[in-house]
Length: 208
Image (cartoon, rainbow, N blue to C red; front, top):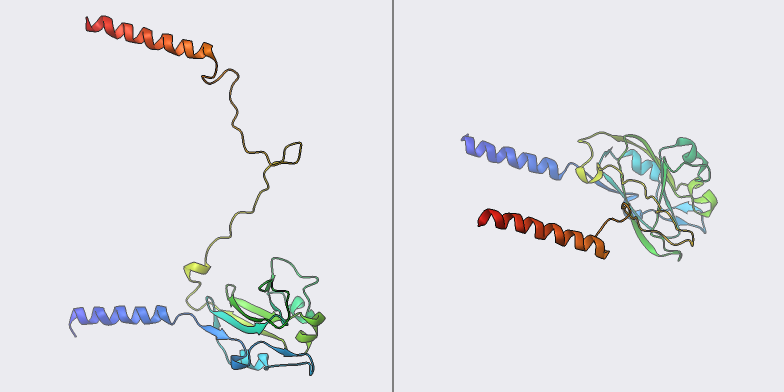
């Protein structure tokens, strides 16, 4: 095989590897992430669904659902088994929602897998009834090829409220200046003019 041809095949292999490195997993496949409140039955057996999948860092879970359900990700098994976020920590439990308060509105939630090991998902809607009746599953996330750069970014620095003045309004930062600094008064202007005239006179003597 010619060297150029071999290089082309190598580049093609690298491209295909990068293109297929990460997977979007549609939770429940066509059944989606849904719950029937009349029968208290979930639209799919999510434990069985997840058992047939392989999950790696950088993959996404796609929840095709509506606003009657919630999507909770936790790394805390106790929170997962309680079917509630009441005693959860902001550092290990995350709620995904659109902010829409109307029931029954279609919703698609994409959750990236960014932590290796046990990841737990559940819906805490209806005071945990959905979770207790099948809207819950756990997965094991392996390293794979690691996180893509888009998901491997440091968190932004925390927001710091600027100091408020006595009347409660926000005060912009003001740099300190020594007393009398600047050219706002006539005395300083006259001094500068005198300096300029003196320097011009000295240069005039050298030029004569």
